[in-house]
Length: 214
Ligand SMILES: [Ca+2]
Ligand SMILES: [Ca+2]
Image (cartoon, rainbow, N blue to C red; front, side, top):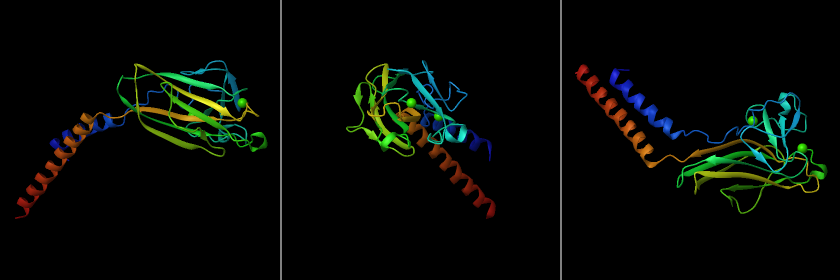
């Protein structure tokens, strides 16, 4: 790789890092407050607010109970229903008018009495992002929502557990909450420019090689 190619690669990497935007959720994987047992009920969890107390659980493969999930990401996750159906939320620092993508992993709890379904509602800036509640009962399901608009400098991301009302301390596991800014068109422009430069260098190199051959 010659010097010019290396410079072009550097430009390409710089443009790419803009595409892979950072997660603006604080402690979206619930790993910041390390618990020592299988589960722990906490008054406070880094980055998050709650209508009740929090419950952090360790994945079944990291000392948690067999009824618990393997963490979707890392070793721990949140159980919204600590002792009652609760909401958790976080005020995200956003740019007004900017578009964001949201993804998270959700699961009901497998040992919920009577096999009752768990259900969750998700709100972005006060508006529900899905018309019907998310429902899942066995294993993690990853949900993705694209192009959510930020109307303010702070946007509240909220998860509200609404089922099972008859076993309100069971389930609604949440993990891997990620919100990233949708790349600006100018970032794509830089990336395209970087790729164009690479293509040009590659063509010139081939032409030079041909000169050497003949
Ligand atoms: Ca986690
Ligand atoms: Ca619980």
